[in-house]
Image (tube, rainbow, N blue to C red; front, side, top):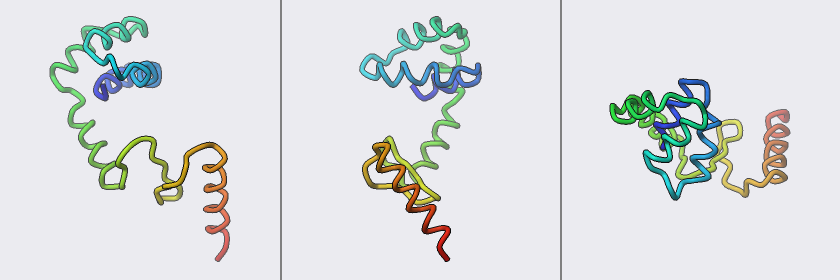
Length: 108
């Protein structure tokens, strides 16, 4: 799935591919990838070839490893000024956490 988004990103369509993949996690397959590629006007041949050759595997592993080193163990994960936010992630809570960080940075 992640490699599929890499192919889409290379063709300027990352988010257009990301959202339907996320919404259809229970039916991830080459058939779905091809279907979405066609809907988005992406080259199905390029997509399937990149998946078969593992063109984006190195990048995916590097991104995954970076997340692990940063303390990411699931999604969503939010960082505010380099500190992982472990509280709820609804809008109001995140805004309050941002305000608190802004105040703490402004206060010597």
